[in-house]
Length: 211
Image 1 (spheres, rainbow, N blue to C red):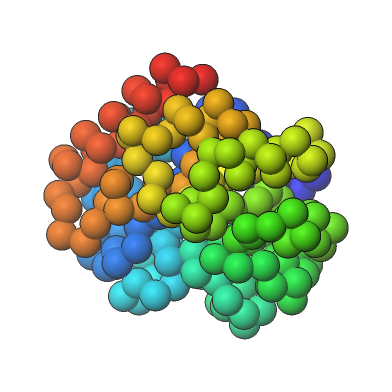
Image 2 (tube, one colour):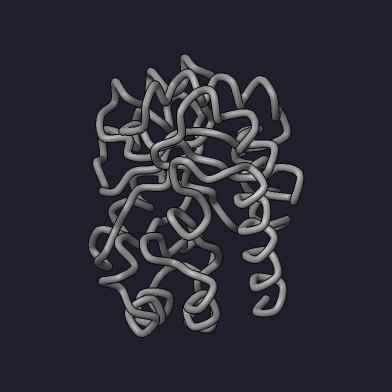
């Protein structure tokens, strides 16, 4: 197990929630990051379709070395290399691309590809994925997650992403979800750090109740 994978295991144990900061700008990166890290969030991704995402990732990696920070919407091996060059440690994709997983694995990065079916899930695990992003969760009800969980290896990390809110986390957790990626319910462009901080605390509170 690489140092980054151990860091991922420890982060998931501490708080299994990934902050998805889509639309984040570099000037917001450290203030928004601080709003999350100060509450105990350990996992942060900046989707690559955000403004200057690599600059935001680099700034947060420098400011929050104990946090596992990386990119979302990673679609190509070249994207993986760019994130790695910026100091990113986490590779999250909306889809399963074996070449992306292979490159992330080669570089020792934590990799969470997006999957929907059992075939995709097992192929991603065989390719070396660190965990599985069940995406979009709007299409994968808790019943679907429960069915996948029943056949996947017990150690496989299952993370529904897409439409996760304070109101539906409990049902997914009961179905076997190990954690969640939280996007617009946590952060949207233009939100103040104070509001993001409040949202972060609310998600921690719900997670604590359902754990």
